[in-house]
Image 1 (tube, rainbow, N blue to C red):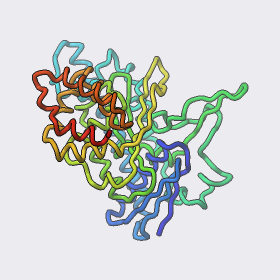
Image 2 (image 1 turned 90 degrees about the vertical axis):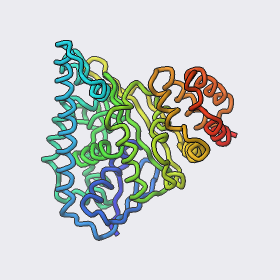
Image 3 (image 1 turned 180 degrees about the vertical axis):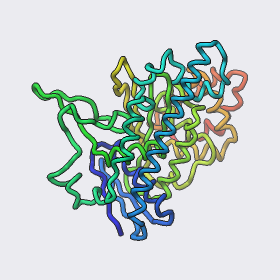
Length: 373
């Protein structure tokens, strides 16, 4: 067995690194068996010896180039939309919704957004040319790069490139006496984090905000569990759900669609979400939340048995600002088993649905009260 460890930067960053490792290993060797154990802010990854280590570097380069192309394409479409808007030519609603962030007054206004900025795209393109052939060796406990005296990640002078708040929520400048410091990620960790972000994380972009959601587990999982997360990421990739969505409403949106996999309910899943906002030239974390998902999984398992209207209800409510707030309240009540909040959320949703009130049927309400009871 090959044993790998994430360096222990932060629960979000290490989860993204773990995602990235799973992606490149499974791409290089689809039949490889992988087990992952969570140690708080770090992960231990065991994979079979059948992995061809020589393929890993090529997979990494291809993945980074693909991510840079996706980002660049989004900016290009956004620029075209900006021109159409300036000429008062209306684009299709589907495209306008998908790239709502890109409806800015000028291309320069895009750059404050931490995900689609030109600077980030350039950084990712540069990373693809700096990949070591012995990449995986940096994630063994014998590695001096992450676990020894030659550690390349950590707090450095502020001139050091940190890696970006999107993949490192504890990034930014720190003041120590008269010295400005910054938490730096090495190129290997940046590479894996971006691959993890674009394959398994939930990304919602809205004007100058980027909302990022990461699902993690509290004990252990295998490669199949992680690969299933890609389904959730793909639900929001096309932008239909992009908007100013409260963090607690995000799991409600993604779990309402399709069948809730039984495999998820066997693990202790947790959602970590954060909102990045650009003010002027600086981006910053505007909100950060972490909560367990077990109760929401239990709710959806029961609700989809009792009712055919779960997806319709969520879809009806998500289309308005008040509806999104109602879903967030409903989700919070279930997450924390708050009966009083649940009563208020149900009344709020009933008032909003009005003529379409039948989509909030007895089966959905029954499932919610069973979980909260």
